[in-house]
Image (cartoon, rainbow, N blue to C red; front, side, top):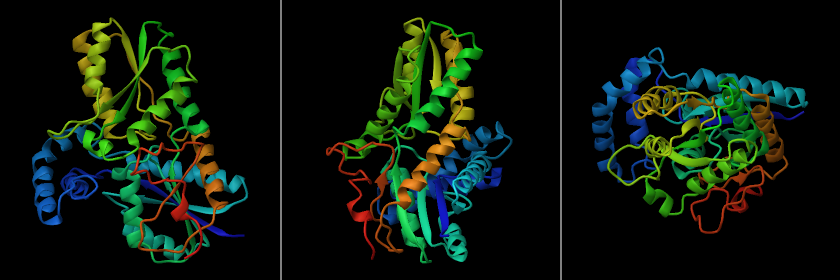
Length: 355
């Protein structure tokens, strides 16, 4: 039986108040985030980290002083291993965080020591962006030199298990609130600078595709919109912002139910931004009710979909480790329109075959 390593990509989060500043520096020095030469990017990243540390520490203090992202991802990894074992696969799930521990080089060494026959790179970002999946794939390809044939899952924005997991959490919170009728469903996603999308990044299109797939499963909430949160800096970002969407709901006399459609586990954007900051905004504006669906987490529909993604990836030709970032194949039926030139899943041609 083949030994399989499944590498789960995520961004990571600080595990202590002291880790906040270096985490922010790692984030903002990524050329996928700030597109400047290193000689300018590194000092700017240090400046941003220094100026944002206190505010970020205050946010993490609301969650006990650390991000819950790693333990949530560990729970998903354990659930995925169990599901793959149930399907008869000898698989071990590893976690590669982009900006904090365990970071990609550490995970790459652990996978090499495991000596797998097959490796599946599986991002916990359902929607592809150059700033998330693209950056994580490049980091992996630069770090890994061990054995095993590699396949990468590029995205799965319309996969049925993902959409059903979001829909189940929406129905759960709506039912608990007494099924209020005067509610607008907001699909809130992490934003991106508009220029990144204009340059061909498929993220916005995939976010909207996920929202449509989930909305089709929640016809009782027919009034729905997509919005974007977590803006940083002065650049123009994707709109409408979630703040603007909440303000629009107030003007229309609507309550809101927010689904964090770009996130599959709880972390600072959901537990602080949605549960505290936007809840306070809704309160000031008289938006009642203000409801928030949980992320998919370890819901069985979502874990089964991740296992399906692994199964499907293993049916494709693999490649040995290479410094070329390469391409990744989509899962779940989605294909990016040709207008999205930065799509990492452009029919998977560069991902096939041996090297």
